[in-house]
Amino acid sequence: MNPQASLIFTASLLLGTTITISSNHWIMAWTGLEINTLAILPLISKSHHPRAIEAATKYFLTQAAASALVLFASMTNAWHTGQWDITQLTHPTSCLILTSAIAMKLGLVPFHFWFPEVLQGSPLTTGLLLSTIMKLPPITLLYMTSPSLNPTLLTILAILSAALGGWMGLNQTQIRKILAFSSISHLGWMAIIIIYNPKLTLLNFYLYAMMTATVFLTLNTIKVLKLSTLMTAWTKIPSLNAMLLLTLLSLAGLPPLTGFLPKWLIIQELTKQEMAPAATLISLLSLLSLFFYLRLAYCTTITLPPHTTNHMKQWRTNKPTNITIAILTTVSIMLLPISPMILTIV
Image (tube, rainbow, N blue to C red; front, side, top):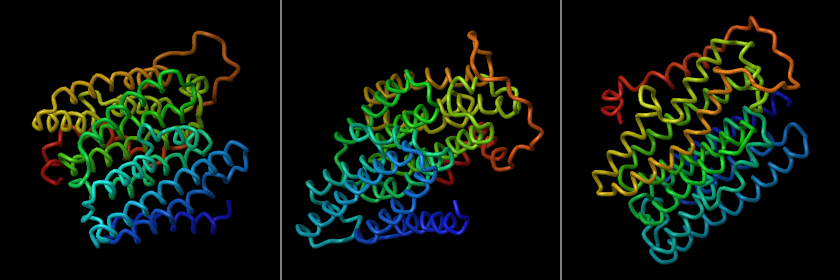
């Protein structure tokens, strides 16, 4: 892609995100979402492969429908209450429509079907943007309207997302699809707590974005897209593969690592809100996604494939690891000991 065009699209992405997260008026928030959608489309379809074009088309249609619903929800609320302020969303029908629109934007179950397909058709760097920065504006809208939303509906969406995100990822061999279902599962954890402690949702999102960025950038460095190629990629940069193992376990939420922090805090908050059954259920459902994280980790470092693959063993590269990946990996693994400090900041 032309560097100037790439710069314009990246700047538009940042602009759209900034407009949405800093706006108080529904029309401005909608404008930011539209700029975001239009800026990411060329980045998805830049390879000119039929699958990339299909992914861009699916993404455009889904996001256009979600944006129309956001506009419809805000207009219905303005019609009944005379308020265009985002925090003044009080009409029950508007809240219901907005929850559906944000679920569609984020890829929460039952509006999740587009996300794995779009991620599978996108390059790894664009997939990283779709999984992290493109989720920030809808989560911000959810954060600002959280006092008015229906807790039962959000809890059902969250538990279904954790269940389907884990269950549908079990049988995948394409790493981008596995990461898409991982994202759906994590969004379930964010959605269940948004009403009771919105700041915890943001903390969960930031940590998830860091860990996902680490995984995507590492995979981009070792040029891996499938489990079969991941099995033979350990010869390229062995130290990076060892770090990828720890980052995947952190993403799964295992205790000594950073990923355990948000899960622990969410379970604690749900228990305080007398929602112990929901906390138990979502914890058990996260074991499903733990299985495919462990399979990814197993393929990454622990073993060579038992069967012969068509892929030749890779030459070890002397290329130094990117400093960004080094910093992100360290943060993705080692934040748990300083969790009291993080909680005082949050």
